[in-house]
Amino acid sequence: MTEAHGIVIVGGGICGLATALALHRKGIASLVLEKSEVLRAEGAGIGVQANGWRALEQLGVAGELRKTAGLITSYHDVWLQGDKSTRDRYPVRTELRCLNRKDLIEALAKDLPAGAIRFGCRIAAVHEDPGGHGAAVLTMADGATIKAKVLIGCDGGTNSVVARYLGLPPVRTIPRLVLRGFTSYPHGHPFKNEFLRLRVGDFFIGRLTITDNLVHFFVTMPTPSPDAGLAGADLRDVRDLVLKELEEHRCPAEITEVVRGSDPESLNLVTKFWYRPPWEVALGGFQKGAVTVAGDAMHAMGPFIGQGGSAGLEDAVVLARTLARAAGGAGEGEDGEAAVGGAIGAYIRERRLRLVLLSLESYIMGVLLVRSPSPAVKLACVAVLVLLGSKSLRHANFDCGRL
Image (cartoon, rainbow, N blue to C red; front, side, top):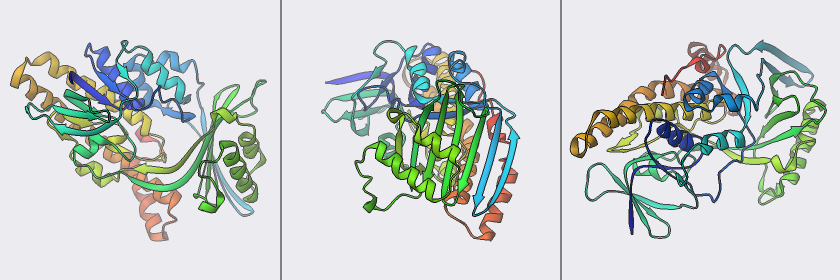
């Protein structure tokens, strides 16, 4: 049997749910196809800067989410090199909060109509509708088919079926171990409301306060050799390995104690970063008829400037806005199909430059933090970051506009 739907969104992560919610706020129905059996709420914390909060305000969930996370008022950068240390502390000039990813996912999902999210959906392939009209047909792993008048791929990561249908190259990956988690302090933590960013050798550690009693941390390090036995290891054992490495690299005790005291149930392990190079974002074909992509499927950019999630929220607002204009200004038939195609084209044109600049900034930060460039390359990277306004966090002042 073949089902027919107006708008189908592949992927029920942050961007997919935000897109469905944005469309719902505009009175447009959609169906989200999610491969997992439940909401994907893993991933510990996620930093959301002012541009992300502006998008969340348009989605109608900013108020409730602000109640779950306090303001982060300063950055504290520390670089330890042997017996020497470099420290820099400066204020956060825009809104920055660290959310529990579970809170964000649930806030985006709870206002969607019943049945708007279909779980356990594994898509085997995407095909052009033989009947034309810019639609696509999804073949599910169980053999069922779904026809979509509009198909939006929010299935980020390395295996986006919609990105593959559009002919986009696979996203690139950087092998890197990342351990993330939460640490609770029933009687209050001793830290300032700051984002501590600590570099020790090849390690990069972050600590963000969420509330007076909850702290989020992440530790990134070179991926251990297969002999380390991490494949299938219990996350407590991974934490012990990370702690051992941190202590051997003389990491400050205030950091190791945060990791040691973390809630084992909150631990989350990532073994690679994925990204789409800025030149692919600049030149990529993000549309085929009424099919497009958003979020990581469009512009995976790694964690280096903390904008991946917020950029996906911006995508959701802009895409829903343009589709709503098309729905209100055209009728059925070829005129309606042309209006939808034009709306998707307008969405891509509006987002392209913004995403190229974000991807470029993130890519350059990744080169500096992960790849140990030569002095000449490092100088060139720093010069580009100055032009991009990286130090002033210009990217966080962006406003995607009203829904």
